[in-house]
Image 1 (tube, rainbow, N blue to C red):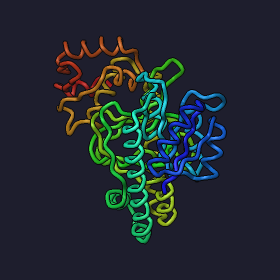
Image 2: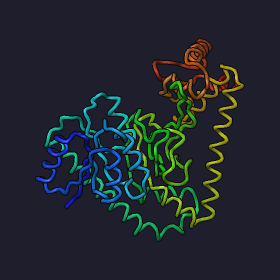
Image 3: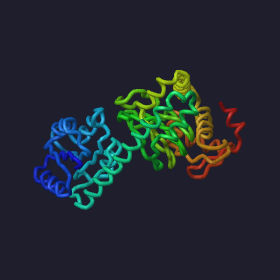
Image 4: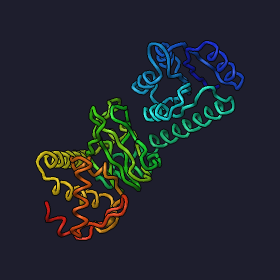
Length: 350
């Protein structure tokens, strides 16, 4: 019998929902507030958690953060059930790592369907993880290069597709995976106190990302988002650390890989501080072309905001510069699409 932890401060709703779940042959453990809910999660290790958001003391978001930070509870499927129906609240809940978000009043059939699908997904992921441990661990000692590590990801990793604009993980969130892009583009960025994005890197097909925090249960200092429909393969950081510990040469290659990324970010920051607007814009366009296109003359579909963020200039200044480049015959611009017509001239600017 599967065990469900229900965290809800409304007594009537808590008792009614518990009764519905018990009639469906689930064992139900209940908590009337977030603090007790976290304690019961650790004590009972339920198969799934349903949690309200607006509660005294610890709210639902804080509960999820604590559950995600605990090694024994971080993989438990988590469903928000809340009266908050605004899209920004739904998105916030999902970005924090919730598996589903149901709005009150919840249809009984919808509730049971959500529970069954999340339990089934958890079982599949658990079986996949066991498969990795049982079949993949024997191959740790044979991974001596980054290319061999990529092959291991493809053989034993979990595949997931992200739509354009969808967050993969957010800044400050606990993310315990390393990712390999099978197809698509991903940007990593930080957001300042005024909500302005600073793009740190652009990743393309066959690139790794997520190495920046090597150990589990540490918050990310950056966020990552799909820039187009993107398919990734991921493996837990715990497994990646085991692989690196078993392969000294690979460990050195990964250190070199991380250092090269850091050097690229430092160069970008220096350019933002000291480069002219024309120079910054030209260099940024070429950088995006190399990251997102097969060759610089291909169309680059990119927002002006993202270009300005990487270049470190105001969006208005960037748009004026793009217009000048167009007049000079360097670029062809149609909507979000940018095509380089004169690469040699663009390169000469910086």
